[in-house]
Structures are given as C-alpha cells and as structure tokens.
Image (cartoon, rainbow, N blue to C red; front, side, top):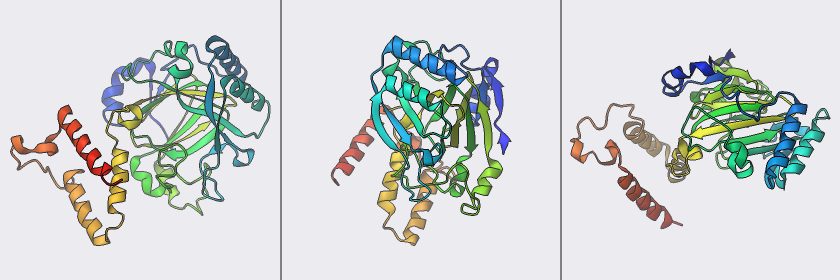
Amino acid sequence: MRPIAEIHAGDLSVFETEYLSTQTPVVIRGLVTGWPLLADSPAEALARLRQLVLDERPGRVRVVEAQRKERGFIGYSAQSGRLNFSRRDMRFDAFVEKLGQLAQIEDVMALALQSTFVDEIFPELASKLSFPLFSSAVRPRIWIGNQSSVGAHFDDADNIACVAMGRRKFILFPPGQIENLYIGPIDYTPAGAPTTLMPPEADLGQYPKFEKSLSVAQSAVLAPGDAIFIPTLWWHQVEALSKINVLVNYWHGGAVGDADADSVFDALLHVLMATQSLSPEKLKAWSEVFDYFVFRRKGDPLAHIPKDIQGILGGMSESQKRKMRAYLSNKLGSKT
C-alpha cells in the first residue's frame, strides 16, 4: 500500500490541472486550518461540540449505532450479511453527551451522525467555513462520531473531505478494483452507495481477490485542518481513529452533489432491471451496443454523421434534456 500524493494549501494552483482534471486522489495538508471548528484531543473536541450546543441549540438529529460486538465497524454483519447497525433520532445535546461518556470507556459501541447539511443544524458555523475549492453553491455536510470505520464504497461525485476534529485514515482503491472488493447488493446498502461486504480486517483466505486491491491501494492519515480529494467512483475505506471525530465534506457533481443532476447510478439500476431476463447471447449483443454508443471503445460513433443530424449523440441542450426527462418519465410511469 503506497501513500496518497500530497500537496499543501499553498500549492492549490496545481490542484485543478494535476488532480481534479485527471481524477487523481490527493491529500491537501492544511487546507482548512482557519476553521473555528478544529480540535485535536477528545477533550478539546467535546468542549467545542458543547459550545455549539449552547451557541446554536440544534434540535433532533438522525444517528447510527453499532453495538460493541461490531468493534466499531458500521456496515454488513460478518455472520448474516445484513446491516449491522440501527438508526434513531435523538437530541443533538444528548448525542454530544453520549459521545463524551463513550470517550471515557474502551471498547464501546459506535455512535455517529452522518452526512447532515451543516447549515441545517449549525447555520452560524456554516457561514464561517471558508472553502477555496468548488463552488460556493456546494453545501457542506458534517459527520460526527466516535471511533468507527466504514467499508470501501464509492460516491457518484467528486468529494473533498476535511478533517475538523480527531484523525482519520483513508484507504483508496481505483474504480477498476470493483471486481476484487466483494461488493454487496446495490439496492441494500449501508448508506445508499455500493459497499464491500468485507470487514475492515478482511481475511484473505475468505476474500482472496482482495489481495489484488491491496497491491494498488493508497492510504493516508489526516489531522485537523487536512483534506483529501477523492475522485468520482474511487472506492474509499474510512476509519475514524480518535474517540471524538468530526469531518466536513463537499460533494461536487453527480446526483449526490447536485439534486438536479442526472444520475448515472439511477441509469444503471434501470439497465439492470431491463436486462435481467436476457439470455447471455443478448446480453453480449447489448454490451456491444453500449461499448459503441456509451463507452465509445470502438471509435467515434459521430465521425460519419453530419453535425446537424447527430441528435443526442452529439450532446443535448438544457431544453432537449428536459424533453428527454419528460419522455423517460412518461415511459417509466406508464409501467408502474
């Protein structure tokens, strides 16, 4: 496993050309050191969270809990293959106090608030989180919890994750490693994204193909103020190392980053539904069509078509996209 490439906050001039445009992961040391949220030790983190309770008085939040026997892992049960955690609502002040109690004990249950818009529970704090990358329209999300880990999964958008409290370890795998990561069902997932069935310390005897993924994996440990760029569809396993951790992330592009964007993942679900009864021969034939029109592995399908009749193959205006969405909505709606 090799280290993820690193740049510093003063080197952002190369971020877009060398990393964003090439979809290459990178750690950005010190990107958000000016945030008022930063804390390193559990005691300092707890004090800052309690101050947020006093300053902004957030109400109820949705949290996840994984029992002590899961050893901090939030995902699938090794025994049953089912999800190994539960969700419930609780007051944010009670959540913070529970984190404080758990921080005094070793070997405890996992408790976490996940993927919540910062401005929904901390509107004043949201206005103070300066962020030099991505559009200001991208709303940051906050993740708060104790020591825990999640298995390798991907996002359908570019992701910049900023560590605010505690330390986190990231392990990244290229998109092509999907065949070696033992991915679970895509319609029964821990948080909506395809996720590995493997626990963090996978037994290579049980998961032999995972050794190939480990040979190309990249890793890094981030401290408060550091950030990491995770490109679209890169698999990432994340471990919160401290007894109290806070992360703020920004998703850009894709349906997870833009509610109005067309979702490639939704298209995948429809393709799976439409092709599930096809014979191997027909699936092979359709794969040739997708390779030609979608992935363009067999040359440019536009090369011989006059520009004025290229249609959707040549790209669509916003007006054409609206018409296509209406067409698809009508077609799919007629089958419900």
